[in-house]
Image 1 (cartoon, rainbow, N blue to C red):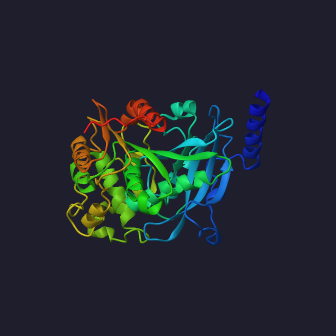
Image 2 (cartoon, helix red, strand yellow):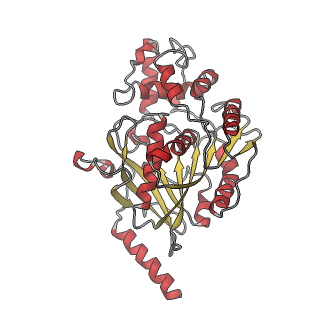
Image 3 (cartoon, rainbow, N blue to C red):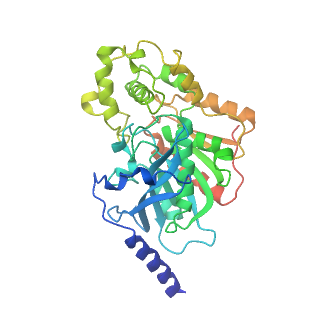
Length: 391
């Protein structure tokens, strides 16, 4: 028996080395995809590369490129990070957690898979390693592989999450099982709400067993209006305006919303990456001065911006999949009353929801505070226990 376990581990390790090359920070060759490789079934693998440079206990790390479909219906390629436990998997394959990250930016260099340690931002990663889960962590379209990231565009995020699950299940080295939990923070919470919403028609073959969302943006118009006085809110507004004005996203003239004299700082915001490891959301130091009067109008009420905000609100209709939602009571980026309103409507529709409030926790303090509860909730779903309901 010991020999068989060793042989299985040695086989996996050999496969890892065979597909691996040491990845240097800023190495963009992996992300350069010729047009001939873009088209193909959603979720099919384009390329994979081992990450022996990432130090992690009892696990292998890869980065992959996989095919997806843009929200406009065009074939695209998306990048992601994969973590796989050492050892022989169970007969049904390793349980899978699809992680959706919070805001990092809107340009290709901001893809988490490009970080020296792409796992550092995943809450509960140590517990995931202990419990022996496969982690698939999408970068989303436009982060990692260009050209543009459709920021907070739900269909785009949701397809990328679902196709990342297909990709890791198609990756022989991952030994991924069918049963998958969705875990996301902030923008990633928005992404997994959308992934669960579109899964019945976009990826009906996937076996989703639960959704754990930490401070998910829901009613975008209300959040943008409420957050306007906060630096973080103005930065996120700037990212939305910059992203949605891109010709490959919604192609809305940005000068319809921003005063010309204030446009330059927002171009700088869009060119940089957000550091969510810090205590609060902030941009690079030189871009911190964001005036409060940069907008000509409120995008939550001014068309066509307002129409797209409504279109990208996730549905609160009944879900067959149970939810865990964590909310910090001191969050000024995703306001608690907005989250609670969304949950009330989910409950009214008949969805099983466990809401957990974290007193005094801000937006970026929440993942660390909630990670234990979220991972325990996910573990219980894999174990087949009934989902708690706080409705």
